[in-house]
Image (tube, rainbow, N blue to C red; front, side):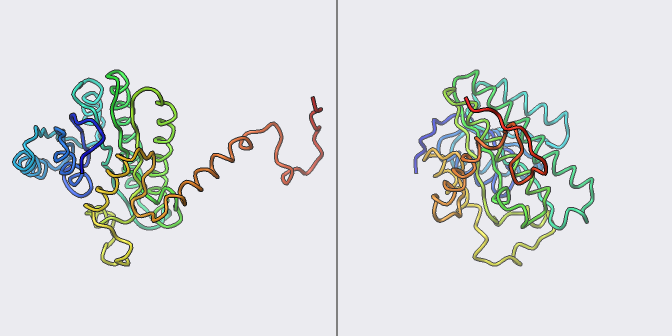
Length: 274
């Protein structure tokens, strides 16, 4: 399938395996040169060599641990300054299973560092560069758990809710600037993230688990279709549209001068009608 997105250099974070590696393969086939970011240098080199051979594209590796501030800042600066970069797939992330109350706070903090702080800094750097260059595409990888925080570790779900909210806010902010943004909300996807989180993915019902290849193909189809939010496993997009419309309908009543009547224990003055 050909892309409706103009080819250029794409940066992919978390590119050494899983969703990131599959994005790299698809984007190379679509005509993008690539900058691959991850900690595992050996895996990055293997992937880059394979993609150079298969797709004939320029593939650069940029080894970086995005949980380390100095290394994160180097990647951030590259996004701001490299005029070849027209796309960021903001994919790097980690998960932790189990109750928040039983978790090691240091591991929760590390998850926030990567899933929220690093994702935010790279997204902001990317869109700043894109605005200055007159266009670009930001793809933020969130999760369906942004919509279902009760079903997994609450800090992980909260980190992905942040990514979704950031994407929606950037979309509103960047309208007319020539910058595309997309949040991808995968369900359970067969990647190494599960093992690192302490979960055997084969313990999940097989009908719940999508392959990374299928997930990325659906996400790219959503990008081509101009979707702001893509939920690859959702059969009827109208379900998401109704949820989002209900959220927006709350707007006029989310901030008012007086509390809602159900919270009033005393009579408050009612403003005179005009």
